[in-house]
Image (cartoon, rainbow, N blue to C red; front, side, top):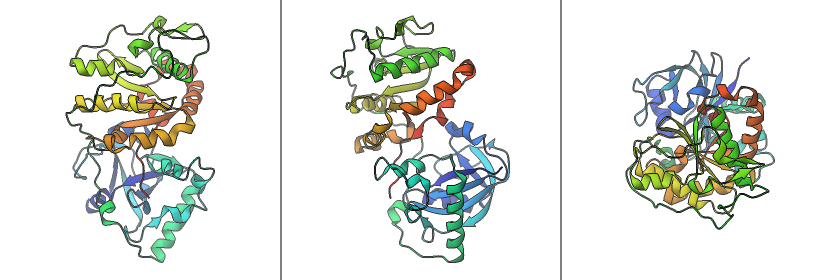
Length: 365
């Protein structure tokens, strides 16, 4: 059975794709697990970020493979599949996605007017067949009867930002303890503490070492003390400078394999989102060659607030922007996924979080 996937392009990467004969579509290394789900016959719905238009349809013609042969100027996008162009529009004749808002399910029951953009932050993301067929019908109509619409040149010319950090420093924030008492375990755990425990227990059960923010070590959830986990680390690796270690030791949860950090989590369950983001930003700024998956974990109803904060100018001007390297995990998705994987959790790899998390990048309409 054919599956349908969203494939994101900027104006520049779309043109580079066409200049390379339109035979290969590629994705970032962190998407390899998802790319491996592609199979010949699947359709890729091509969407131009910045101008919010659907511009083409590709059919997958090969199994996934890895290759760094130059196609795109700014990044390798090494996780690849061979494709055949089925429909090709131009930016000016592309279908504005908002023209389809009365027909697509992604525009229904929105928590906020901008919530629909969450469906256009991930490349590669799977789409419902019913929505995909509506998009394909609109692309076919645009191919038969093209309509020229003005395009904002600045948005069209936007290039992907390579995932290479620049040395610098934002600040080294102390942990904000005003929202809840962090010195004593509570009989009824806060949502923050509950999620912190779930992430620690998950990493522990996967066979990884785990670290909890140094001033949260004495906490417990329903009689389970953080400090009693078999794989809890008492000390962090000493491969970083003092300022970096000071930042890292305050992050809510870390998963480690040996001396390598394989995932970092900040849990944002209160109104005090900004301090956790600063810790993530410092980690990026102070360690330019560090490639750690970063996750912001928050209640579903705080999704838009988190995304607004991540995309503040302070964080957008980092290289890479914080929104490009952080992913969002809603509480509900984490809890649901944990219930599904419980029987085989010891066989999981950290990259299974790719399917639970969402991109933090905000699409501009």
